Amino acid sequence: METKSEKEFDAVKFMREQRKSLSKKLSKMTKTEIVEYFRSRQLKHSIKPSA
Image (cartoon, rainbow, N blue to C red; front, side, top):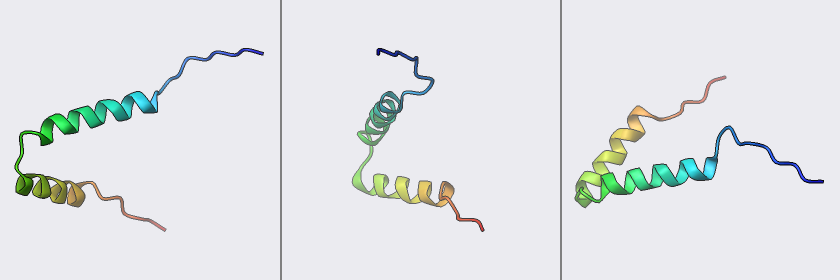
């Protein structure tokens, strides 16, 4: 039994692309800028639970 299906979304490929993009962006920043970057993202993109 051999089944092949085309993936609509490749999670591993997506994660590798995101990591590469983030590494490129962070490589140009100082440690202080990196900390500030993640603090600002946390405030903007936090997921809030809803009942």
